[in-house]
Image (cartoon, rainbow, N blue to C red; front, side, top):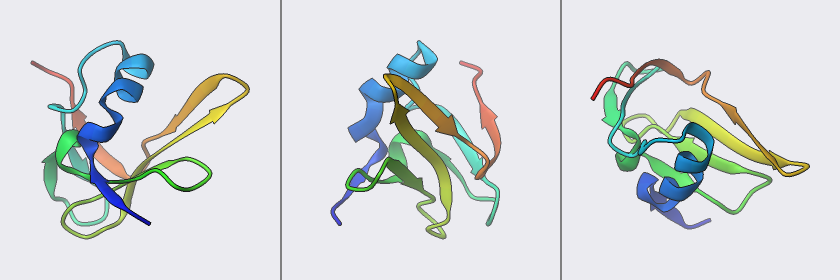
Length: 84
């Protein structure tokens, strides 16, 4: 499965959150590393989009489209900083 960076899902994140999200910093719940979402590892070839921590490879987010809606699971993020 090809790995991309988080910028590959910039449009999908914008559609869900309504703001530019690739520059938002998140803290991995597994290892505590802080990275911008655009720096994370992204895998598109599954039942959904998987976002993995750049430091420890734990899943930090999953995006799945179900009946025309994008469902987002962010339980792999201990914190997300939406301040600009």
